[in-house]
Amino acid sequence: MTMNANDLLLDIRELTIHYVTDNGTVHAVEGLNLELGRGETLGLVGETGAGKTTTALGITRLLPVPPGVVRGGQILFDGEDVLLKDEEEMRSIRGGKIAMIFQDPMTSLNPVMTVDKQVAEMIKLHRKVSESEALEQAAEMLDLVGIRRERLRDYPHQFSGGMKQRVVIAIALACDPKLLIADEPTTALDVTIQAQVLELMKNLKRQFGTSMILITHDLGIVAETCDKVGIMYAGRLVEYGDTKSLYDNPNHPYTVGLFKSVPDLEEDCDELSVIPGLMPDPMDLPSGCAFHPRCSHAEEACSRERPVMIEIEPGHFIACPVRARALGKA
Amino acid sequence: MIRYIVRRVLFLIPVLVGVAFCVFTLLYLTPGDPARMVLGDLATESALQEFRAKEGLDQPYLVQFGNYLYKAVFHGDIGRSYVTKRPVMSEILVAFPYTLKLAAFAMVIAILVGVPCGILSAIKQYSIFDTLTMIFAMIGLSMPVFWLGLLLIILFSVHLRWLPSSGFDTFQAMILPSVALAAQSISMVTRMTRSSMLEVIRADYIRTARSKGQKESIVIWVHALRNALIPVVTLCGLQFGHLLSGAILTESIFAIPGVGRLMVDAIKTRDYPMVQGGVLFVAVAFSIVNLLVDLLYAYIDPRIKAQYR
Image (tube, rainbow over all chains, first blue to last red; front, top):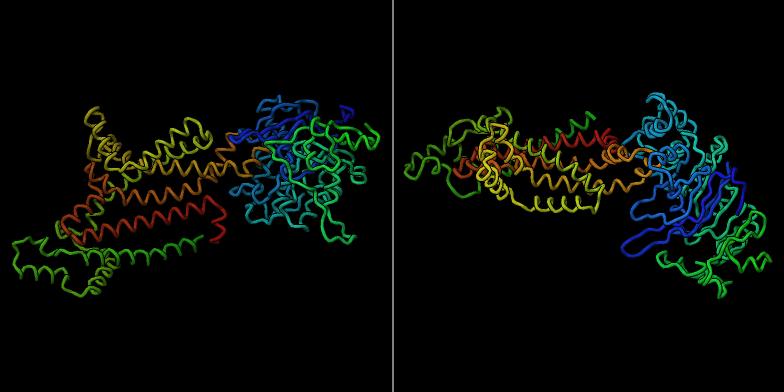
C-alpha cells in the first residue's frame, strides 16, 4: 500500500495492541497497516471483537491502561508518530486535531452538565476564547447540527437519542479537527434517525473538509458514506480498497462471506448464508492467516505463513495469497 | 421545586404521628409502674393513685395518646420529666447542642477523610494505598464504637495524656468522641465513594471528556466527582441522621451530656415523658436531615430535579 506520503493524513504501520489480563493476552490488533488520505472517508468494517474500536482508541491513545498495551508499530498522524508524543501534546491533538464520536449517545454525555457547556468545554480547551465566547460558539455549533437555541441550557436526559448524537457530533466538530473517528455512530439509533445522523455527518464533513474513519459493521452505511473500505478480521486488515472496486469485486474469502451474509431484497432466499465457524478466541489466534480454519480456500501454507497485503488491482489489496494467485497476481 | 418542598414537608406529618404512636405504645406496654418508680417502694397506695391521676396515667390508652399529641402539636409541650420535674422540651434543648455538635464534627471528619480516600482508592485501584484503605475501612466498620472509644481513651488519655477522656467543652475534648463516632461513617463513606467512583470513571462520558483533550485532573475532579457524589450524598444524609440518633454509646463513654445520654438516663429511671420526648425529637431531627438531603440531591442531579417540576 503506497500513496504519496504528503497526501497521507494517517499512516498506521504494523500496529500491535494487546490487552494483558490475568487469564491471558488478548491480541486485539495484530500488525495492522492502514492509510488515510486527506479529506478521505475510510470505512472500517468487521465483526465485534475484530479490533476496530481498539484501533480507534489506539490512535488517540485513549486505551484503558491497564490492561491495554501498545506492543509495537507506528501511528503517523500528519507525519508524526503519536505513540511518541507526551501526554500534553496528546491532549492538544485529542479534540483539536483528532475528534471522536462514540457508539452510544445515551451514555456519551455528562448527565449533570448542560449541553452547551459540554460543547463549550471542547472549544475552551483548544481555542483561546473567554467563557462567554466559547458558549456563543457552542450555540452556533449546536445550531449547525439542528439544536435550537432554547434547548442550549438543557441537560442530556431531556434529549432523545438522535438529538444526543447530534450534540456529540457538535462536540466532535467544534474545533474543526483534521480527523474524525466515528465509532459505530448510528448503531444505537433507530433506522430513520440513523439516516438523518449519517446525512448530517456527511454534510458537515464536506463543509469542514474533515477526514473520517467510520467504524461500523453495516456494509450499507459504508457504501453510502465512504471512499475507501478496510475489512478487519481478528485484529488484522484482510482487504482494503476503493469502496466501488471492493464492493464490485470482493476478493478475500472473509469479505466474500460477509457480502454473502447480507440479504438481497430482490432475490428470494430462505436462508442467509453464514461464514462457517466462529471468530477465533483473541487470546489464542490461529497461526498463519487467522481466517484459515474457517476458509474454504485454505491451503496447508495458510496455517504457517502470515499473509501480506497483495495489490490485485490498482488501490485494491487483499491479504490472501491463495486468492491473489488465482487472480494471477502473486 | 417549591411544590416539591411543601409536599415533602407535609409528608413529615404522618411519619411523625406514626413515630409518636409507636414510642407511646411501646412504653405503655413495657412492664413497670412509673408511679412506683418515681415515688419509691415506700409510697402509699393513695399517693400512687394520686400520682396516676395527676399524670393522666389512669386514663384509657387512646385518650392518653390523644392528649399527648394534642399538647405536643398545639403547645409544643411533650410532657414534664418525672425525675427533674422540668419540661422535657427544655431538657432536650439543653442537651441537643452537644449531640448536634458531636454529630456534625463526626460527619465533617467522615467526609473530609472518606471522600478523598475513596477517590484515591478508585483512581489507584488495587494499589497498596487502595488495599490499606480497604483494610482500615473494614476494621472501622467492624469495630463497635464503645470498644474503639475505650481504646482511644486508653491510648490518648491514659498513656499519652494528650487528650481528655471526657467532656465536650473544649476543642481537645471534642476530638476523641468525634473520631470514635466517625469511625464507621468514615469507612462507609470511603467504600461508597470508591465504588461509585470506580463505576463513574469507566463511564462513556468520562471517555468523551478525555477525547476532548481535557486534563486528567479535571476529568476526575469535575466530570467524574460530581456524578460519583450523588450516592455519597444520600449515604452522608443517612449517616448524619444515624450520628444524631446513634451518639448514645459515644455520649455515655465520653460522659457528654447530650440527648443520647439523657435518654439512657431516662430509660434507667423509667422517666416515660423524657424517653418519649427524646425519641420523638431524634425522629424529627432525622426526618429533617433526610428532607435536606433530598433537596440537595435534586440540586446535584438535574435528572431528579426534572421529576419534581
